[in-house]
Image (cartoon, one colour):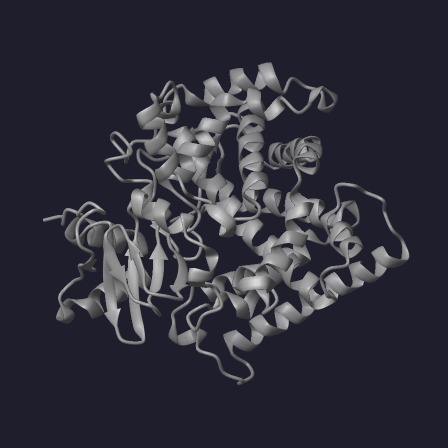
Length: 453
């Protein structure tokens, strides 16, 4: 039976947890099939529960109210540069996502300025233009009735958008090279814990990931040197903004660029794959998206302005519903730097908190019929249900440590699905959505096969 959480007004309790003899099995399942493991833990022990013991002590937090409490806490109550954080090996020790305290504030602050609303709005024509180029290439090599896996198609599109926004037009020709250098590190992050143990040995997966990062750094260094010698003056170029800001060292800039590409590329393309699969399973939804896109996007890039995104209301709801049901990250870790109380439960210092947008997005108290894909669930909510939805929709996190590129990701997904609907005919080849796979990046098993035309 599912354990009922006490109200915060009662005495603080110890975390509910599986019996000790069952914990190894739960931990193995969590790393192999995290989505099923989380659903099972929540069903049996509630949306806040414990796992492990001693130095490997974890707390799963998927309760929307508990997450609201956690996100409202000061950042110094948590650590992100902890012993379990394997991301630092890939993105670098100077990345904002593995930084704490003043270092995090300085690094994030420098990058945050590069995601101003003015810059985001300026990217709208570029995103649509890149989407059109992808559609044109797809149309050239496919015939009506062909089944196409749209996952790699979407990954290539999102990578072009990310590279263009980071580096400008000059680097777009190197997208394939940059994508190849990120593929092995991303695969490595999804590999077993044993394979990720630190070691200096050559000719291993870890050594090859290290070599890929050296090659990526060489590309970034070359581009930084070129910018210093030949400024583009492009107000939309993030790399030039970081160089001009001057608050980050070259090593820190390299780590932020690696972070922005890695986080903005794989996660957004996985969300796009889920979006295409989910929309294709709802009768009439593709046509509704097309009708809206015809009204808002028209046929000319010159027509777009600051109201364009706001007028893509259905496309925005599709994005929200997709990321509710299939958030890009099923689990996000942070370590408790002090003893905490979350949701009425005691979480001791040193506990690795695994907070879950997956569980919050499927919480039946916040969402009616939570496993059903329904973009219209966000329409005409009363104040109470709007507050519940806002609290439980956390695919990009909340607070000072939320995903720095969340606005770009939402904008990309909204514009891409609208333009795809406007220019492509897509039909489902399955009766249901596939099972999810991946702990670091939640993606559909088997990709996103759909029928074109």
